[in-house]
Image (cartoon, rainbow, N blue to C red; front, top):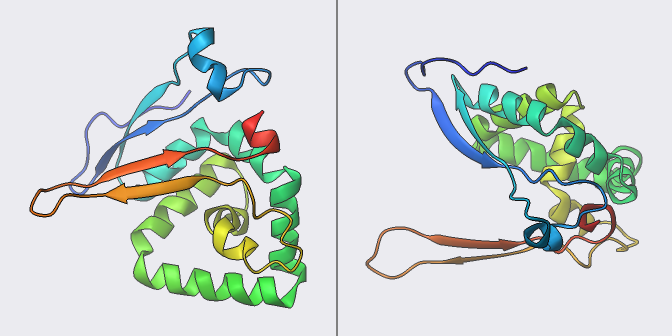
Amino acid sequence: GMEAPTALAPGGVSTMWEATVLPRQARPDRAAALGTAPPLFLIEARSLYDAGFQQGRLASQNIRGWLSSPEMTDLVNFTMADSIGRTALAQLVRDNTAVFPELVDEMRGVAAGAGVPMHDIWVATLITELEALQPSGRWRDGHCSDIFAGATGLPGLVHGHNEDWPGAVRD
């Protein structure tokens, strides 16, 4: 098992993370009918790396499953064997690392916790940007949608997200 720290160090993080773990034959749209609610994990961590590590450990099977899907295998190959994909990923990694170094630490934790290459976590994180560059374009349809909304003069932001992934993710 995984042990959570008993107290947060100064600058530590506490995050809520929701994970859907359903039997392979169960689809998320049938979860309510099955009476299964996705588990909610409270992760208390000393750093974003630690939070990512715990998330990676908890979701290791799901992460590995997704990374072995035909879509992700194709995209990882594109970023390794194709000069356009390789160059684009390198530039996106440089840009994102410069602007969001703390989030890169969390990604490193996810990779370590799941026992997968950091390269693959980058590819999964930048899937939309990278697939837009693939000449085949075969994976572009059917992905998630996000919407952000806020009211002028009021604090806060509302984020809506849906899961429209086809194939292995949907099933």
